[in-house]
Image (tube, rainbow, N blue to C red; front, side, top):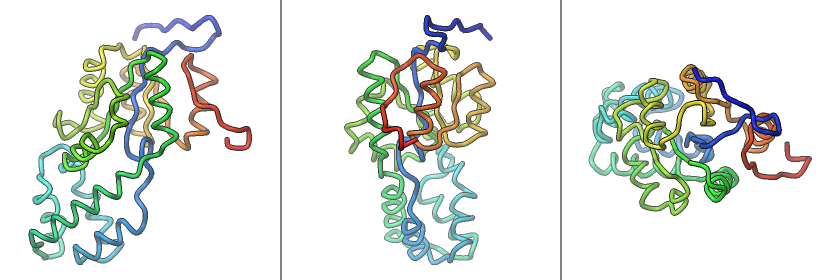
Length: 224
């Protein structure tokens, strides 16, 4: 891995920032989101939550269509869903992941205005990614959107990070990656990408400001 030189202020210079989407650029699902899908699907918690995630990777990777994903979930309990049920489940699932975190989105906009390369790298099914692109003007702040459903790879596969870097035209040592899952952070770090585990926007921005030479949002002293 190439050695990174520090900026004049002793911090690591950064040319690009890559954001995860779930729980970083958007808020977490609400309990009511899962409860709504549970009712439509006819599978009670906690079994519904278990099955929802059990087949999520193939769905995110486009190995399963939305219909196949939901029928697979239901089939584990011997159920068959109607077309109307599947349509409602897709709607509720998308809505549950479409509540943006405005503070993180504004940070991405701030970085874009400052001239940094800004990317999004997310494990995400096509139903959600298409909705976000069609309805989110905020995506214009990103130079490239790397969705697992499009590249047919998921984090923490090293290949998806390499695809994202190539699309952004940046080297690993020039980039900061923010994700809320430790395995994804660890995989990126192995490629030489500066990686930070995202907690709250306030804590993450404060930690980044101490170590990296790039713009960060400002919050009151009591917010961190």
